[in-house]
Length: 558
Image (cartoon, rainbow, N blue to C red; front, top):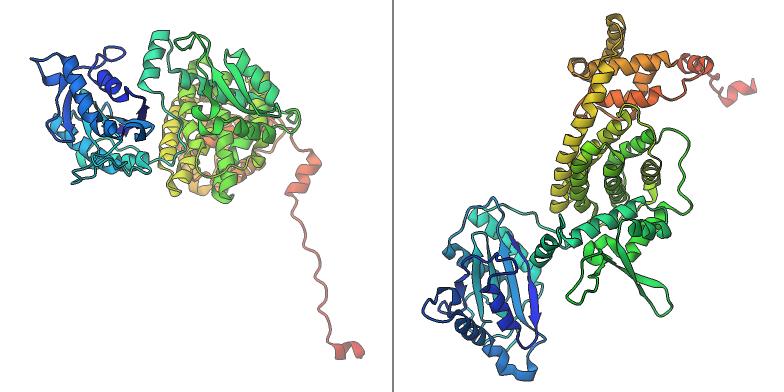
Protein backbone atom coordinates (compact mmCIF):
# COMPACT_ATOMS: atom_id res chain seq x y z
CA UNK A 1 0.00 0.00 0.00
CA UNK A 2 1.49 3.29 -1.13
CA UNK A 3 0.39 6.61 0.46
CA UNK A 4 1.80 9.85 -0.91
CA UNK A 5 1.37 13.33 0.54
CA UNK A 6 0.80 16.39 -1.68
CA UNK A 7 0.29 19.92 -0.34
CA UNK A 8 -1.89 22.54 -2.02
CA UNK A 9 -1.87 26.32 -1.67
CA UNK A 10 -3.76 29.32 -2.97
CA UNK A 11 -7.23 30.78 -2.37
CA UNK A 12 -8.95 28.10 -4.46
CA UNK A 13 -6.86 25.09 -3.44
CA UNK A 14 -9.70 23.23 -1.70
CA UNK A 15 -12.24 23.85 -4.47
CA UNK A 16 -9.69 22.82 -7.07
CA UNK A 17 -8.84 19.61 -5.21
CA UNK A 18 -12.49 18.61 -4.72
CA UNK A 19 -13.19 19.36 -8.38
CA UNK A 20 -10.37 17.06 -9.41
CA UNK A 21 -11.40 14.26 -7.03
CA UNK A 22 -15.00 14.20 -8.29
CA UNK A 23 -14.14 14.92 -11.93
CA UNK A 24 -13.38 12.50 -14.74
CA UNK A 25 -9.63 12.61 -14.18
CA UNK A 26 -6.98 13.58 -16.69
CA UNK A 27 -7.56 10.44 -18.75
CA UNK A 28 -11.13 9.57 -17.67
CA UNK A 29 -9.64 7.23 -15.09
CA UNK A 30 -11.98 8.28 -12.26
CA UNK A 31 -14.68 5.61 -12.03
CA UNK A 32 -17.67 6.25 -9.75
CA UNK A 33 -15.99 8.76 -7.37
CA UNK A 34 -17.79 8.85 -4.00
CA UNK A 35 -17.10 9.42 -0.31
CA UNK A 36 -16.18 6.47 1.89
CA UNK A 37 -15.45 8.52 5.04
CA UNK A 38 -15.30 12.10 6.31
CA UNK A 39 -14.53 14.10 9.44
CA UNK A 40 -18.16 13.98 10.64
CA UNK A 41 -19.46 10.97 8.66
CA UNK A 42 -22.26 13.01 7.04
CA UNK A 43 -20.44 15.40 4.71
CA UNK A 44 -22.21 16.13 1.41
CA UNK A 45 -21.24 13.57 -1.26
CA UNK A 46 -21.19 14.84 -4.88
CA UNK A 47 -21.01 11.23 -6.06
CA UNK A 48 -24.13 10.13 -4.19
CA UNK A 49 -26.51 13.08 -4.62
CA UNK A 50 -28.61 12.12 -7.66
CA UNK A 51 -31.22 14.88 -7.19
CA UNK A 52 -28.77 17.78 -7.05
CA UNK A 53 -26.29 19.28 -9.48
CA UNK A 54 -22.92 17.63 -8.66
CA UNK A 55 -21.13 20.96 -9.07
CA UNK A 56 -23.32 22.53 -6.39
CA UNK A 57 -22.56 19.67 -4.02
CA UNK A 58 -18.83 20.00 -4.76
CA UNK A 59 -19.00 23.69 -3.91
CA UNK A 60 -20.89 22.93 -0.66
CA UNK A 61 -18.35 20.27 0.35
CA UNK A 62 -15.38 22.55 -0.42
CA UNK A 63 -16.96 25.37 1.57
CA UNK A 64 -17.45 23.13 4.61
CA UNK A 65 -13.89 21.87 4.42
CA UNK A 66 -12.59 25.42 4.03
CA UNK A 67 -14.57 26.99 6.88
CA UNK A 68 -11.76 26.78 9.51
CA UNK A 69 -9.29 28.19 6.97
CA UNK A 70 -11.54 31.12 6.07
CA UNK A 71 -11.97 31.98 9.75
CA UNK A 72 -8.23 32.76 9.99
CA UNK A 73 -8.31 35.17 7.06
CA UNK A 74 -4.83 36.56 6.39
CA UNK A 75 -3.40 34.41 9.19
CA UNK A 76 -4.14 31.20 7.29
CA UNK A 77 -1.08 29.03 6.52
CA UNK A 78 0.60 29.09 3.12
CA UNK A 79 -0.37 25.49 2.38
CA UNK A 80 -4.03 24.90 3.16
CA UNK A 81 -4.73 21.50 1.57
CA UNK A 82 -3.29 18.10 2.55
CA UNK A 83 -3.91 15.54 -0.23
CA UNK A 84 -2.91 11.89 0.20
CA UNK A 85 -3.67 9.25 -2.46
CA UNK A 86 -3.51 5.70 -1.03
CA UNK A 87 -3.17 2.85 -3.52
CA UNK A 88 -3.28 -0.91 -3.02
CA UNK A 89 -1.09 -3.31 -4.99
CA UNK A 90 -2.59 -4.93 -8.13
CA UNK A 91 -2.52 -8.38 -6.50
CA UNK A 92 -4.30 -7.20 -3.32
CA UNK A 93 -7.92 -8.26 -2.65
CA UNK A 94 -10.61 -5.68 -3.44
CA UNK A 95 -11.53 -3.81 -0.27
CA UNK A 96 -15.03 -2.61 0.59
CA UNK A 97 -15.99 1.03 1.10
CA UNK A 98 -16.14 0.37 4.84
CA UNK A 99 -12.62 -1.03 4.84
CA UNK A 100 -11.28 1.90 2.83
CA UNK A 101 -13.04 4.26 5.26
CA UNK A 102 -11.29 2.59 8.20
CA UNK A 103 -7.96 2.87 6.39
CA UNK A 104 -8.56 6.59 5.76
CA UNK A 105 -9.27 7.20 9.47
CA UNK A 106 -6.05 5.42 10.44
CA UNK A 107 -4.03 7.44 7.91
CA UNK A 108 -5.30 10.87 9.03
CA UNK A 109 -4.81 9.88 12.67
CA UNK A 110 -1.23 8.75 12.05
CA UNK A 111 -0.47 11.96 10.13
CA UNK A 112 -1.73 14.20 12.95
CA UNK A 113 -4.52 15.54 10.72
CA UNK A 114 -7.32 14.01 12.81
CA UNK A 115 -6.11 12.10 15.88
CA UNK A 116 -8.63 9.57 17.12
CA UNK A 117 -11.16 11.11 19.52
CA UNK A 118 -10.13 14.72 18.74
CA UNK A 119 -13.38 16.55 17.98
CA UNK A 120 -11.55 19.78 17.07
CA UNK A 121 -9.28 18.14 14.49
CA UNK A 122 -8.96 19.14 10.83
CA UNK A 123 -11.80 18.50 8.43
CA UNK A 124 -11.18 15.79 5.85
CA UNK A 125 -12.83 13.49 3.32
CA UNK A 126 -11.84 10.20 1.66
CA UNK A 127 -12.91 9.72 -1.97
CA UNK A 128 -12.83 6.36 -3.72
CA UNK A 129 -12.18 6.41 -7.46
CA UNK A 130 -11.75 2.74 -8.26
CA UNK A 131 -11.30 -0.66 -6.65
CA UNK A 132 -7.65 -0.13 -5.81
CA UNK A 133 -7.31 3.37 -4.34
CA UNK A 134 -8.73 6.32 -2.45
CA UNK A 135 -7.77 9.99 -2.11
CA UNK A 136 -7.81 11.72 1.26
CA UNK A 137 -8.19 15.51 1.22
CA UNK A 138 -7.98 17.68 4.35
CA UNK A 139 -7.67 21.35 5.16
CA UNK A 140 -4.70 22.30 7.33
CA UNK A 141 -6.44 24.35 9.98
CA UNK A 142 -8.09 22.64 12.94
CA UNK A 143 -11.67 23.52 13.84
CA UNK A 144 -10.35 25.33 16.92
CA UNK A 145 -8.20 27.54 14.66
CA UNK A 146 -4.86 25.92 15.51
CA UNK A 147 -2.46 24.17 13.13
CA UNK A 148 -2.31 20.36 13.18
CA UNK A 149 0.76 18.68 14.69
CA UNK A 150 1.91 16.73 11.65
CA UNK A 151 5.67 16.61 12.13
CA UNK A 152 7.22 13.89 9.96
CA UNK A 153 3.75 13.00 8.64
CA UNK A 154 5.15 11.23 5.57
CA UNK A 155 7.17 8.88 7.75
CA UNK A 156 4.25 8.31 10.14
CA UNK A 157 1.85 7.58 7.29
CA UNK A 158 4.26 5.09 5.74
CA UNK A 159 4.67 3.36 9.09
CA UNK A 160 0.89 3.09 9.50
CA UNK A 161 0.56 1.77 5.95
CA UNK A 162 2.96 -1.07 6.78
CA UNK A 163 0.72 -2.02 9.73
CA UNK A 164 -2.43 -1.76 7.58
CA UNK A 165 -0.87 -4.22 5.14
CA UNK A 166 -0.44 -6.70 7.98
CA UNK A 167 -3.93 -6.18 9.39
CA UNK A 168 -5.69 -6.53 6.03
CA UNK A 169 -3.48 -9.25 4.54
CA UNK A 170 -2.22 -6.97 1.75
CA UNK A 171 1.09 -7.10 -0.06
CA UNK A 172 3.71 -5.98 2.43
CA UNK A 173 6.07 -3.31 1.10
CA UNK A 174 9.56 -2.85 2.49
CA UNK A 175 10.27 0.01 4.89
CA UNK A 176 12.56 2.62 3.38
CA UNK A 177 15.36 4.84 4.62
CA UNK A 178 14.66 7.99 2.62
CA UNK A 179 17.18 7.20 -0.13
CA UNK A 180 14.76 5.91 -2.77
CA UNK A 181 14.30 7.80 -6.02
CA UNK A 182 11.09 9.78 -6.37
CA UNK A 183 8.35 7.89 -8.19
CA UNK A 184 6.60 9.49 -11.18
CA UNK A 185 3.25 11.04 -10.34
CA UNK A 186 0.05 9.90 -12.02
CA UNK A 187 0.12 13.18 -13.94
CA UNK A 188 3.58 12.31 -15.29
CA UNK A 189 2.39 8.84 -16.30
CA UNK A 190 -0.59 10.24 -18.20
CA UNK A 191 1.63 12.81 -19.91
CA UNK A 192 4.05 10.07 -20.97
CA UNK A 193 1.13 8.16 -22.46
CA UNK A 194 0.06 11.23 -24.45
CA UNK A 195 3.62 11.73 -25.71
CA UNK A 196 3.90 8.08 -26.74
CA UNK A 197 6.73 7.39 -24.29
CA UNK A 198 7.23 3.92 -22.84
CA UNK A 199 7.98 5.40 -19.42
CA UNK A 200 7.58 8.69 -17.59
CA UNK A 201 10.10 11.41 -18.43
CA UNK A 202 11.54 11.23 -14.90
CA UNK A 203 12.37 7.53 -15.37
CA UNK A 204 13.87 8.01 -18.84
CA UNK A 205 16.07 10.85 -17.62
CA UNK A 206 17.22 8.91 -14.56
CA UNK A 207 18.28 5.98 -16.75
CA UNK A 208 20.14 8.15 -19.28
CA UNK A 209 21.92 10.20 -16.63
CA UNK A 210 22.98 7.08 -14.72
CA UNK A 211 24.39 5.52 -17.90
CA UNK A 212 26.26 8.69 -18.74
CA UNK A 213 27.81 8.72 -15.26
CA UNK A 214 28.76 5.05 -15.61
CA UNK A 215 30.35 5.53 -19.03
CA UNK A 216 32.03 8.93 -18.70
CA UNK A 217 35.73 9.37 -18.04
CA UNK A 218 35.31 12.98 -16.93
CA UNK A 219 32.76 15.76 -16.62
CA UNK A 220 33.16 16.94 -20.22
CA UNK A 221 32.44 13.46 -21.56
CA UNK A 222 29.48 13.15 -19.18
CA UNK A 223 27.80 16.17 -20.73
CA UNK A 224 28.76 15.03 -24.24
CA UNK A 225 27.11 11.66 -23.65
CA UNK A 226 23.93 13.34 -22.41
CA UNK A 227 23.85 15.49 -25.53
CA UNK A 228 24.32 12.40 -27.70
CA UNK A 229 21.33 10.72 -26.06
CA UNK A 230 19.06 13.73 -26.52
CA UNK A 231 19.12 15.07 -22.97
CA UNK A 232 19.08 18.86 -22.61
CA UNK A 233 21.18 20.23 -19.76
CA UNK A 234 20.77 23.49 -17.85
CA UNK A 235 23.42 24.39 -15.27
CA UNK A 236 22.67 26.31 -12.11
CA UNK A 237 25.47 28.85 -11.72
CA UNK A 238 26.68 30.49 -8.52
CA UNK A 239 27.81 34.12 -8.15
CA UNK A 240 31.34 33.08 -9.15
CA UNK A 241 30.06 31.54 -12.36
CA UNK A 242 30.80 28.00 -11.19
CA UNK A 243 28.15 25.33 -11.81
CA UNK A 244 26.46 24.41 -8.53
CA UNK A 245 23.64 22.26 -9.86
CA UNK A 246 22.33 20.59 -12.98
CA UNK A 247 18.85 20.22 -14.50
CA UNK A 248 17.85 17.80 -17.26
CA UNK A 249 15.05 17.73 -19.83
CA UNK A 250 13.84 15.59 -22.73
CA UNK A 251 13.01 17.08 -26.14
CA UNK A 252 9.26 17.22 -26.66
CA UNK A 253 8.43 17.23 -22.96
CA UNK A 254 7.18 20.79 -22.50
CA UNK A 255 4.84 22.72 -20.23
CA UNK A 256 1.72 24.63 -21.31
CA UNK A 257 3.97 27.51 -22.46
CA UNK A 258 5.97 25.26 -24.76
CA UNK A 259 9.05 25.40 -22.52
CA UNK A 260 11.11 22.29 -21.70
CA UNK A 261 10.30 20.68 -18.35
CA UNK A 262 13.56 20.42 -16.42
CA UNK A 263 14.23 18.04 -13.54
CA UNK A 264 17.06 18.63 -11.12
CA UNK A 265 19.45 15.73 -10.74
CA UNK A 266 18.66 15.35 -7.04
CA UNK A 267 14.95 14.91 -7.82
CA UNK A 268 15.73 12.16 -10.32
CA UNK A 269 17.66 10.28 -7.63
CA UNK A 270 19.51 11.35 -4.47
CA UNK A 271 22.88 10.33 -5.95
CA UNK A 272 22.41 12.26 -9.21
CA UNK A 273 22.98 15.76 -7.88
CA UNK A 274 25.88 17.51 -9.62
CA UNK A 275 28.17 17.31 -6.53
CA UNK A 276 27.55 13.56 -6.23
CA UNK A 277 28.11 13.03 -9.95
CA UNK A 278 31.37 14.96 -9.79
CA UNK A 279 32.54 12.90 -6.84
CA UNK A 280 32.07 9.69 -8.81
CA UNK A 281 33.72 11.08 -11.94
CA UNK A 282 36.74 12.46 -10.08
CA UNK A 283 37.18 9.23 -8.13
CA UNK A 284 37.05 7.05 -11.20
CA UNK A 285 39.15 9.25 -13.47
CA UNK A 286 41.89 11.35 -11.92
CA UNK A 287 43.62 10.89 -15.27
CA UNK A 288 42.47 9.59 -18.68
CA UNK A 289 40.89 6.18 -18.39
CA UNK A 290 43.40 3.48 -19.21
CA UNK A 291 43.54 -0.22 -18.52
CA UNK A 292 46.43 -2.60 -18.63
CA UNK A 293 46.92 -4.55 -21.86
CA UNK A 294 45.07 -7.83 -21.80
CA UNK A 295 41.63 -9.32 -22.10
CA UNK A 296 39.12 -6.69 -20.97
CA UNK A 297 36.47 -9.31 -20.22
CA UNK A 298 38.89 -11.11 -17.93
CA UNK A 299 39.87 -7.90 -16.14
CA UNK A 300 36.26 -6.88 -15.55
CA UNK A 301 35.39 -10.38 -14.36
CA UNK A 302 38.33 -10.54 -11.97
CA UNK A 303 37.37 -7.16 -10.49
CA UNK A 304 33.74 -8.26 -10.12
CA UNK A 305 34.86 -11.45 -8.41
CA UNK A 306 36.55 -9.36 -5.71
CA UNK A 307 33.26 -7.71 -4.69
CA UNK A 308 32.14 -10.57 -2.38
CA UNK A 309 35.43 -10.28 -0.50
CA UNK A 310 34.89 -6.57 0.08
CA UNK A 311 31.28 -7.18 1.16
CA UNK A 312 32.41 -9.67 3.79
CA UNK A 313 35.78 -8.25 4.92
CA UNK A 314 35.92 -4.49 4.21
CA UNK A 315 34.37 -1.64 6.19
CA UNK A 316 30.90 -0.40 5.25
CA UNK A 317 31.96 2.63 3.14
CA UNK A 318 34.31 0.44 1.05
CA UNK A 319 31.70 -2.27 0.67
CA UNK A 320 29.05 0.24 -0.34
CA UNK A 321 31.45 1.72 -2.89
CA UNK A 322 31.68 -1.74 -4.46
CA UNK A 323 27.89 -1.83 -4.79
CA UNK A 324 27.90 1.57 -6.49
CA UNK A 325 30.54 0.32 -8.95
CA UNK A 326 28.57 -2.89 -9.54
CA UNK A 327 25.49 -0.81 -10.27
CA UNK A 328 27.45 1.26 -12.80
CA UNK A 329 28.68 -1.94 -14.47
CA UNK A 330 25.11 -3.25 -14.71
CA UNK A 331 24.03 0.09 -16.22
CA UNK A 332 26.46 -0.46 -19.12
CA UNK A 333 25.91 -4.20 -19.65
CA UNK A 334 22.80 -3.78 -21.86
CA UNK A 335 24.95 -1.82 -24.33
CA UNK A 336 27.78 -4.37 -24.33
CA UNK A 337 25.95 -7.70 -24.41
CA UNK A 338 23.92 -9.54 -27.06
CA UNK A 339 20.80 -7.73 -28.23
CA UNK A 340 18.60 -10.65 -27.19
CA UNK A 341 19.57 -10.03 -23.55
CA UNK A 342 18.97 -6.29 -23.58
CA UNK A 343 15.50 -6.32 -21.97
CA UNK A 344 16.50 -8.57 -19.06
CA UNK A 345 19.75 -6.68 -18.48
CA UNK A 346 17.98 -3.32 -18.49
CA UNK A 347 15.47 -4.59 -15.94
CA UNK A 348 18.29 -5.98 -13.80
CA UNK A 349 20.10 -2.62 -13.87
CA UNK A 350 16.92 -0.68 -13.13
CA UNK A 351 16.17 -2.92 -10.14
CA UNK A 352 19.70 -2.93 -8.74
CA UNK A 353 19.84 0.87 -8.92
CA UNK A 354 17.88 0.95 -5.64
CA UNK A 355 20.46 -1.37 -4.04
CA UNK A 356 23.26 1.15 -4.70
CA UNK A 357 21.86 3.81 -2.32
CA UNK A 358 21.70 3.79 1.46
CA UNK A 359 22.61 6.06 4.35
CA UNK A 360 26.18 4.71 4.22
CA UNK A 361 28.62 6.98 2.40
CA UNK A 362 30.37 5.14 -0.42
CA UNK A 363 34.16 4.98 -0.67
CA UNK A 364 34.94 4.42 -4.35
CA UNK A 365 38.73 4.24 -4.15
CA UNK A 366 38.84 0.45 -4.48
CA UNK A 367 36.54 0.36 -7.52
CA UNK A 368 38.84 1.83 -10.18
CA UNK A 369 39.69 -1.44 -11.93
CA UNK A 370 36.09 -2.57 -12.26
CA UNK A 371 34.80 0.75 -13.53
CA UNK A 372 37.66 1.34 -15.95
CA UNK A 373 37.54 -2.15 -17.40
CA UNK A 374 33.77 -2.01 -17.94
CA UNK A 375 34.09 1.46 -19.46
CA UNK A 376 36.77 0.11 -21.80
CA UNK A 377 34.46 -2.76 -22.85
CA UNK A 378 31.70 -0.23 -23.53
CA UNK A 379 34.05 1.94 -25.62
CA UNK A 380 36.15 -0.63 -27.45
CA UNK A 381 33.70 -3.53 -27.91
CA UNK A 382 36.47 -6.15 -27.56
CA UNK A 383 36.15 -9.43 -29.40
CA UNK A 384 34.22 -12.14 -27.58
CA UNK A 385 34.45 -14.95 -30.06
CA UNK A 386 31.98 -17.40 -28.50
CA UNK A 387 30.27 -15.27 -25.86
CA UNK A 388 32.37 -16.75 -23.06
CA UNK A 389 33.71 -13.35 -21.97
CA UNK A 390 30.23 -11.95 -21.39
CA UNK A 391 29.04 -15.20 -19.79
CA UNK A 392 31.85 -15.29 -17.25
CA UNK A 393 31.30 -11.60 -16.39
CA UNK A 394 27.62 -12.30 -15.80
CA UNK A 395 28.53 -15.32 -13.68
CA UNK A 396 30.70 -13.13 -11.46
CA UNK A 397 27.97 -10.47 -11.32
CA UNK A 398 25.43 -13.07 -10.18
CA UNK A 399 27.61 -14.01 -7.22
CA UNK A 400 28.26 -10.35 -6.38
CA UNK A 401 24.53 -9.54 -6.39
CA UNK A 402 23.84 -12.57 -4.18
CA UNK A 403 26.36 -11.22 -1.67
CA UNK A 404 24.78 -7.77 -1.98
CA UNK A 405 21.44 -9.27 -0.90
CA UNK A 406 23.06 -10.70 2.23
CA UNK A 407 24.99 -7.48 2.93
CA UNK A 408 21.82 -5.39 2.87
CA UNK A 409 19.85 -8.00 4.82
CA UNK A 410 22.15 -8.01 7.84
CA UNK A 411 22.04 -4.20 7.88
CA UNK A 412 18.23 -4.23 7.66
CA UNK A 413 18.14 -2.33 4.37
CA UNK A 414 14.80 -3.85 3.38
CA UNK A 415 14.17 -1.97 0.12
CA UNK A 416 17.74 -2.45 -1.06
CA UNK A 417 17.62 -6.16 -0.27
CA UNK A 418 14.37 -6.57 -2.21
CA UNK A 419 15.81 -4.62 -5.16
CA UNK A 420 18.92 -6.82 -5.28
CA UNK A 421 16.72 -9.93 -5.17
CA UNK A 422 14.74 -8.64 -8.14
CA UNK A 423 17.92 -7.84 -10.05
CA UNK A 424 19.25 -11.33 -9.38
CA UNK A 425 16.19 -12.92 -10.99
CA UNK A 426 16.69 -10.92 -14.21
CA UNK A 427 20.43 -11.67 -14.28
CA UNK A 428 19.75 -15.38 -13.87
CA UNK A 429 17.47 -15.35 -16.91
CA UNK A 430 20.07 -13.47 -18.97
CA UNK A 431 22.91 -15.71 -17.78
CA UNK A 432 21.04 -18.89 -18.73
CA UNK A 433 20.52 -17.55 -22.25
CA UNK A 434 24.14 -16.55 -22.84
CA UNK A 435 25.94 -19.32 -20.93
CA UNK A 436 24.13 -22.38 -22.22
CA UNK A 437 25.26 -22.08 -25.89
CA UNK A 438 28.86 -21.46 -24.76
CA UNK A 439 28.86 -24.49 -22.48
CA UNK A 440 27.27 -26.67 -25.15
CA UNK A 441 29.94 -25.56 -27.62
CA UNK A 442 32.71 -26.35 -25.14
CA UNK A 443 31.18 -29.73 -24.28
CA UNK A 444 31.12 -30.67 -27.97
CA UNK A 445 34.94 -30.51 -27.90
CA UNK A 446 35.33 -32.64 -24.76
CA UNK A 447 38.62 -34.60 -24.56
CA UNK A 448 38.95 -38.36 -24.58
CA UNK A 449 37.55 -40.48 -21.74
CA UNK A 450 41.11 -41.21 -20.57
CA UNK A 451 41.89 -37.50 -20.30
CA UNK A 452 38.61 -36.82 -18.52
CA UNK A 453 39.39 -39.63 -16.09
CA UNK A 454 42.76 -38.03 -15.33
CA UNK A 455 41.12 -34.65 -14.73
CA UNK A 456 38.50 -36.29 -12.52
CA UNK A 457 41.31 -37.76 -10.44
CA UNK A 458 42.80 -34.27 -10.02
CA UNK A 459 39.42 -32.94 -8.90
CA UNK A 460 38.89 -35.71 -6.36
CA UNK A 461 42.28 -34.99 -4.84
CA UNK A 462 42.02 -31.19 -4.92
CA UNK A 463 38.44 -30.62 -3.86
CA UNK A 464 36.92 -33.86 -2.52
CA UNK A 465 33.97 -32.07 -0.92
CA UNK A 466 32.74 -30.82 -4.32
CA UNK A 467 34.10 -33.44 -6.74
CA UNK A 468 31.02 -35.65 -6.80
CA UNK A 469 28.74 -32.69 -7.54
CA UNK A 470 31.09 -31.36 -10.24
CA UNK A 471 31.41 -34.71 -12.01
CA UNK A 472 27.62 -35.10 -12.06
CA UNK A 473 27.07 -31.56 -13.39
CA UNK A 474 26.00 -31.08 -17.00
CA UNK A 475 28.90 -28.60 -17.31
CA UNK A 476 31.53 -31.25 -16.52
CA UNK A 477 32.34 -31.85 -20.19
CA UNK A 478 32.81 -28.09 -20.72
CA UNK A 479 35.13 -27.98 -17.71
CA UNK A 480 37.14 -30.92 -19.08
CA UNK A 481 37.43 -29.08 -22.41
CA UNK A 482 38.90 -25.88 -20.91
CA UNK A 483 41.33 -27.97 -18.82
CA UNK A 484 42.45 -29.78 -21.97
CA UNK A 485 42.79 -26.48 -23.87
CA UNK A 486 44.85 -25.00 -21.04
CA UNK A 487 47.08 -28.08 -21.12
CA UNK A 488 47.46 -27.79 -24.90
CA UNK A 489 48.53 -24.15 -24.43
CA UNK A 490 51.39 -25.24 -22.20
CA UNK A 491 49.80 -25.12 -18.74
CA UNK A 492 49.86 -27.90 -16.21
CA UNK A 493 46.23 -28.99 -15.75
CA UNK A 494 46.64 -29.78 -12.06
CA UNK A 495 48.35 -26.43 -11.46
CA UNK A 496 45.64 -24.46 -13.28
CA UNK A 497 42.95 -26.34 -11.37
CA UNK A 498 44.65 -25.51 -8.08
CA UNK A 499 44.88 -21.85 -9.07
CA UNK A 500 41.19 -21.75 -9.99
CA UNK A 501 40.22 -23.36 -6.70
CA UNK A 502 42.37 -20.87 -4.83
CA UNK A 503 40.63 -17.81 -6.31
CA UNK A 504 37.44 -18.22 -4.29
CA UNK A 505 35.59 -20.88 -2.37
CA UNK A 506 33.03 -22.95 -4.25
CA UNK A 507 30.75 -23.16 -1.24
CA UNK A 508 28.47 -20.39 -2.49
CA UNK A 509 28.62 -21.32 -6.20
CA UNK A 510 25.29 -22.33 -7.71
CA UNK A 511 27.19 -24.56 -10.14
CA UNK A 512 30.79 -25.31 -9.11
CA UNK A 513 31.46 -26.85 -12.53
CA UNK A 514 30.44 -23.65 -14.32
CA UNK A 515 32.36 -21.46 -11.90
CA UNK A 516 35.54 -23.50 -12.48
CA UNK A 517 34.96 -23.50 -16.24
CA UNK A 518 35.05 -19.70 -16.41
CA UNK A 519 38.02 -19.39 -14.05
CA UNK A 520 40.09 -21.96 -15.92
CA UNK A 521 39.12 -20.42 -19.26
CA UNK A 522 40.66 -17.14 -18.06
CA UNK A 523 43.74 -18.80 -16.56
CA UNK A 524 44.27 -20.93 -19.64
CA UNK A 525 44.40 -17.89 -21.91
CA UNK A 526 47.30 -16.39 -19.97
CA UNK A 527 50.88 -17.07 -21.00
CA UNK A 528 51.95 -20.43 -19.59
CA UNK A 529 54.87 -20.45 -17.15
CA UNK A 530 58.31 -21.38 -18.51
CA UNK A 531 59.54 -24.93 -17.82
CA UNK A 532 62.05 -23.53 -15.32
CA UNK A 533 59.34 -21.58 -13.46
CA UNK A 534 57.08 -24.61 -13.43
CA UNK A 535 59.89 -26.78 -12.11
CA UNK A 536 60.67 -24.23 -9.42
CA UNK A 537 57.04 -24.14 -8.42
CA UNK A 538 56.72 -27.92 -8.15
CA UNK A 539 60.13 -28.63 -6.59
CA UNK A 540 59.78 -28.90 -2.83
CA UNK A 541 61.92 -26.46 -0.93
CA UNK A 542 64.52 -28.19 1.27
CA UNK A 543 64.47 -26.89 4.80
CA UNK A 544 67.60 -25.06 5.85
CA UNK A 545 69.96 -26.89 8.17
CA UNK A 546 69.14 -26.14 11.74
CA UNK A 547 71.71 -24.00 13.56
CA UNK A 548 73.32 -25.68 16.57
CA UNK A 549 71.69 -24.70 19.79
CA UNK A 550 73.50 -21.99 21.70
CA UNK A 551 75.79 -23.34 24.35
CA UNK A 552 75.48 -22.18 27.88
CA UNK A 553 77.93 -19.52 29.00
CA UNK A 554 79.88 -21.99 31.15
CA UNK A 555 80.45 -24.34 28.20
CA UNK A 556 81.78 -21.52 25.99
CA UNK A 557 84.28 -20.60 28.65
CA UNK A 558 85.74 -24.08 28.44
